[in-house]
Amino acid sequence: MLKRIISIVVVGSLLAGCQTLSTASPQVELNGIRKNTCKPGNYTRQFSEGSADTLYNAQSIGAAGFLIDNYIIAYRCAADDVAEGRAFFDVNTFLLATAAATGVAFGLNETEIIGLGVAAATSRGGSQYFAPKEKASVFTDALIALRCVKREATGSSLLAGYPTADQIRIYEAREKLVTNPQVRYFALVENSLGEINTIVRRRLSNVGNDDFSSILAEINQIGQNKNAAEGKANSFIQEASQKRDKSGNNALSESQAKAIAAVLEANAALELLKPQLSECVLKAKVPEVTAPKAE
Image 1 (cartoon, one colour):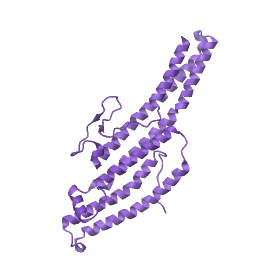
Image 2 (cartoon, one colour; image 1 turned 180 degrees about the vertical axis):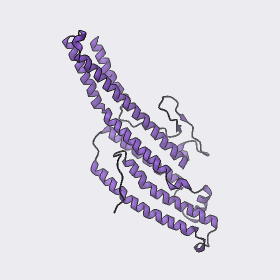
Image 3 (cartoon, rainbow, N blue to C red; image 1 turned 60 degrees about the horizontal axis):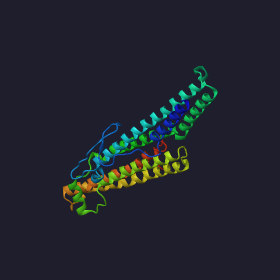
């Protein structure tokens, strides 16, 4: 009977570890809007914006905001699951070790006490194998990175006055527009979220082996990118100011000047946002990181 109890506890511990401490990254809702809950079941609602019925069909500023929130909720729930898995291992280890230490008082023979000791060691081994403490920190770091993405993305000056559809059409009629600013914004955000997800998968499959030399190189590169982005953004802003200046722009109507300036200012905001999001992504590896500007 005792052997059966030991087997059930040990196998149950390991199965719980498999469920809560898998090396897979959390499942993120990519189409609809996830409700702010960790309960199982139907936790999404349909996204709708104009003719778009999914976040990726819309590729807008609003869709990017929902996508960020979907990631944050998924990772918060995963962090909670890992915490529960760690507690599961710790409680089982404590109970089995205590039973082994007091086995004689309960009339257990030497073989049964040894069996309890082995079970406790197995539970400890399971805890070490699944590394719940280390893996909990992976999800915590990812949450720090994701919240950084949300802070920088929602704080972008682009949101204060991004160009309207009419202004974009006016710009396209006179200039060459590579990509709609809202689509570029969505792509920057989505790419950052995907990079954080990739970092999490790598860390979960190889916990504790970060290449810090490459991280330092990334920090320096981000610093250089910040400087370059400021230069490009200033150029866009200066050009926008010139377009708004009617005295040197008689070839443009007032609406045309405002439209072109609005798109140029959006481009400036996007240039500044790129390195900021890169810094956020790096926080999934080193949460305290802040990339200095290159001298």
